[in-house]
Image (tube, rainbow, N blue to C red; front, side):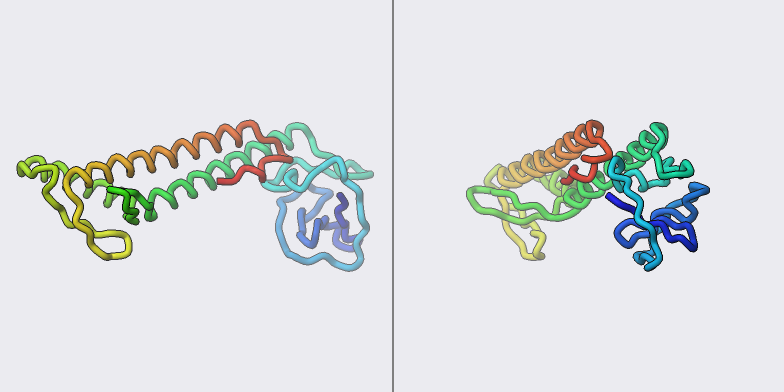
Length: 193
Protein backbone atom coordinates (compact mmCIF):
# COMPACT_ATOMS: atom_id res chain seq x y z
CA UNK A 1 0.00 0.00 0.00
CA UNK A 2 1.23 3.48 -0.74
CA UNK A 3 0.29 6.90 0.49
CA UNK A 4 1.01 10.12 -1.30
CA UNK A 5 2.75 13.06 0.37
CA UNK A 6 2.14 16.50 -1.09
CA UNK A 7 5.63 18.02 -1.30
CA UNK A 8 4.23 21.57 -0.96
CA UNK A 9 1.76 21.20 1.91
CA UNK A 10 3.26 18.11 3.61
CA UNK A 11 -0.20 16.50 3.71
CA UNK A 12 -0.66 12.75 3.38
CA UNK A 13 -3.22 11.17 1.04
CA UNK A 14 -4.56 7.68 0.50
CA UNK A 15 -6.79 6.84 -2.49
CA UNK A 16 -7.68 10.50 -2.84
CA UNK A 17 -8.53 10.98 0.83
CA UNK A 18 -6.54 13.42 2.92
CA UNK A 19 -5.53 11.36 5.93
CA UNK A 20 -3.66 13.90 8.02
CA UNK A 21 -3.55 17.68 8.12
CA UNK A 22 0.13 17.97 8.96
CA UNK A 23 1.88 14.62 9.07
CA UNK A 24 4.95 16.03 10.76
CA UNK A 25 2.88 17.18 13.72
CA UNK A 26 0.47 14.22 13.87
CA UNK A 27 -2.63 16.42 13.71
CA UNK A 28 -6.19 15.18 13.28
CA UNK A 29 -7.26 13.33 10.17
CA UNK A 30 -9.68 14.91 7.73
CA UNK A 31 -11.18 13.83 4.42
CA UNK A 32 -11.10 16.05 1.32
CA UNK A 33 -11.63 13.48 -1.47
CA UNK A 34 -8.82 14.88 -3.61
CA UNK A 35 -5.14 14.31 -4.10
CA UNK A 36 -2.83 16.95 -5.59
CA UNK A 37 -0.71 16.05 -8.62
CA UNK A 38 2.62 16.89 -6.96
CA UNK A 39 2.65 13.95 -4.52
CA UNK A 40 5.50 11.64 -3.62
CA UNK A 41 4.42 8.03 -3.04
CA UNK A 42 5.58 6.37 0.17
CA UNK A 43 5.24 2.63 0.67
CA UNK A 44 3.60 1.70 3.95
CA UNK A 45 2.76 -1.90 3.09
CA UNK A 46 3.09 -3.05 6.67
CA UNK A 47 0.19 -0.78 7.69
CA UNK A 48 -3.45 -0.66 6.68
CA UNK A 49 -5.91 2.21 6.31
CA UNK A 50 -7.81 1.51 9.57
CA UNK A 51 -4.71 2.77 11.40
CA UNK A 52 -5.63 6.27 10.31
CA UNK A 53 -9.22 6.18 11.43
CA UNK A 54 -9.96 7.81 14.73
CA UNK A 55 -6.72 9.79 14.90
CA UNK A 56 -4.35 6.96 15.81
CA UNK A 57 -0.67 7.42 16.56
CA UNK A 58 0.71 7.38 13.03
CA UNK A 59 3.91 9.42 13.24
CA UNK A 60 6.57 10.56 10.80
CA UNK A 61 9.98 9.51 12.10
CA UNK A 62 12.07 11.57 9.67
CA UNK A 63 12.32 8.90 6.98
CA UNK A 64 8.84 7.38 6.93
CA UNK A 65 5.65 6.68 8.83
CA UNK A 66 5.32 4.30 11.72
CA UNK A 67 2.45 3.36 13.97
CA UNK A 68 3.09 3.05 17.67
CA UNK A 69 1.65 0.03 19.49
CA UNK A 70 -0.23 2.46 21.70
CA UNK A 71 -1.73 4.09 18.63
CA UNK A 72 -2.78 0.75 17.17
CA UNK A 73 -4.58 -0.23 20.37
CA UNK A 74 -6.31 3.17 20.58
CA UNK A 75 -7.49 2.94 17.01
CA UNK A 76 -8.77 -0.63 17.46
CA UNK A 77 -10.72 0.37 20.57
CA UNK A 78 -12.20 3.34 18.72
CA UNK A 79 -13.18 1.15 15.76
CA UNK A 80 -14.67 -1.49 18.06
CA UNK A 81 -16.76 1.12 19.85
CA UNK A 82 -18.03 2.51 16.54
CA UNK A 83 -18.77 -0.97 15.21
CA UNK A 84 -20.73 -1.89 18.37
CA UNK A 85 -22.81 1.27 17.95
CA UNK A 86 -23.40 0.32 14.31
CA UNK A 87 -24.65 -3.11 15.42
CA UNK A 88 -26.90 -1.54 18.07
CA UNK A 89 -28.35 0.84 15.49
CA UNK A 90 -29.03 -2.09 13.15
CA UNK A 91 -30.71 -4.02 15.97
CA UNK A 92 -32.89 -1.00 16.79
CA UNK A 93 -33.80 -0.68 13.12
CA UNK A 94 -35.19 -4.23 13.19
CA UNK A 95 -36.86 -3.78 16.58
CA UNK A 96 -38.68 -0.66 15.42
CA UNK A 97 -39.69 -1.94 12.00
CA UNK A 98 -42.10 -4.59 10.85
CA UNK A 99 -41.67 -8.34 11.02
CA UNK A 100 -43.40 -11.23 9.31
CA UNK A 101 -45.06 -13.76 11.59
CA UNK A 102 -46.91 -16.96 10.75
CA UNK A 103 -50.26 -17.57 12.42
CA UNK A 104 -52.35 -20.59 11.48
CA UNK A 105 -50.15 -21.17 8.41
CA UNK A 106 -50.69 -17.62 7.12
CA UNK A 107 -48.00 -14.94 7.12
CA UNK A 108 -48.82 -11.50 8.49
CA UNK A 109 -46.61 -8.45 8.68
CA UNK A 110 -46.94 -6.64 11.98
CA UNK A 111 -45.21 -3.65 13.49
CA UNK A 112 -42.84 -4.83 16.18
CA UNK A 113 -41.93 -1.57 17.89
CA UNK A 114 -42.34 -1.24 21.64
CA UNK A 115 -45.78 0.39 21.40
CA UNK A 116 -47.13 -2.40 19.19
CA UNK A 117 -45.69 -5.12 21.42
CA UNK A 118 -47.19 -3.49 24.48
CA UNK A 119 -50.57 -3.15 22.77
CA UNK A 120 -50.62 -6.86 21.94
CA UNK A 121 -49.96 -7.78 25.56
CA UNK A 122 -52.59 -5.33 26.79
CA UNK A 123 -55.13 -6.77 24.36
CA UNK A 124 -54.42 -10.30 25.57
CA UNK A 125 -54.65 -9.24 29.22
CA UNK A 126 -57.89 -7.36 28.59
CA UNK A 127 -59.40 -10.32 26.72
CA UNK A 128 -58.59 -12.62 29.63
CA UNK A 129 -59.94 -10.13 32.18
CA UNK A 130 -63.14 -9.87 30.14
CA UNK A 131 -63.47 -13.65 30.14
CA UNK A 132 -63.10 -13.97 26.37
CA UNK A 133 -62.57 -17.50 25.10
CA UNK A 134 -59.47 -18.42 23.12
CA UNK A 135 -61.62 -18.61 20.00
CA UNK A 136 -63.10 -15.11 20.41
CA UNK A 137 -61.73 -12.56 17.92
CA UNK A 138 -59.85 -9.31 18.31
CA UNK A 139 -59.38 -7.00 15.33
CA UNK A 140 -55.74 -6.11 14.85
CA UNK A 141 -54.12 -3.49 12.62
CA UNK A 142 -51.29 -4.87 10.47
CA UNK A 143 -48.21 -2.93 9.35
CA UNK A 144 -49.79 -2.16 5.96
CA UNK A 145 -52.71 -0.46 7.80
CA UNK A 146 -55.13 -3.25 6.94
CA UNK A 147 -56.96 -5.17 9.67
CA UNK A 148 -57.19 -8.84 10.52
CA UNK A 149 -59.30 -10.60 13.13
CA UNK A 150 -57.13 -12.80 15.31
CA UNK A 151 -58.52 -15.13 17.91
CA UNK A 152 -57.24 -14.58 21.42
CA UNK A 153 -55.20 -17.78 21.07
CA UNK A 154 -53.73 -16.56 17.77
CA UNK A 155 -52.85 -13.21 19.35
CA UNK A 156 -51.00 -15.12 22.07
CA UNK A 157 -49.05 -16.90 19.32
CA UNK A 158 -48.25 -13.49 17.80
CA UNK A 159 -46.95 -12.27 21.18
CA UNK A 160 -44.74 -15.36 21.55
CA UNK A 161 -43.36 -15.02 18.02
CA UNK A 162 -42.69 -11.31 18.54
CA UNK A 163 -40.81 -12.10 21.76
CA UNK A 164 -38.75 -14.71 19.91
CA UNK A 165 -38.03 -12.24 17.09
CA UNK A 166 -36.95 -9.55 19.56
CA UNK A 167 -34.72 -11.94 21.49
CA UNK A 168 -33.27 -13.14 18.20
CA UNK A 169 -32.14 -9.59 17.37
CA UNK A 170 -30.44 -9.28 20.76
CA UNK A 171 -28.75 -12.65 20.20
CA UNK A 172 -27.42 -11.47 16.84
CA UNK A 173 -26.11 -8.29 18.46
CA UNK A 174 -24.41 -10.34 21.20
CA UNK A 175 -22.76 -12.60 18.60
CA UNK A 176 -21.60 -9.56 16.65
CA UNK A 177 -20.16 -8.05 19.83
CA UNK A 178 -18.10 -11.20 20.33
CA UNK A 179 -16.89 -10.97 16.72
CA UNK A 180 -15.96 -7.33 17.30
CA UNK A 181 -14.01 -8.23 20.45
CA UNK A 182 -12.03 -10.83 18.49
CA UNK A 183 -11.47 -8.56 15.47
CA UNK A 184 -8.18 -6.97 14.52
CA UNK A 185 -7.54 -3.78 12.59
CA UNK A 186 -7.51 -5.90 9.43
CA UNK A 187 -10.78 -7.74 10.16
CA UNK A 188 -12.98 -5.20 11.99
CA UNK A 189 -14.67 -4.07 8.76
CA UNK A 190 -15.67 -7.67 8.03
CA UNK A 191 -18.11 -7.65 10.96
CA UNK A 192 -21.53 -6.95 9.44
CA UNK A 193 -25.10 -7.63 10.60
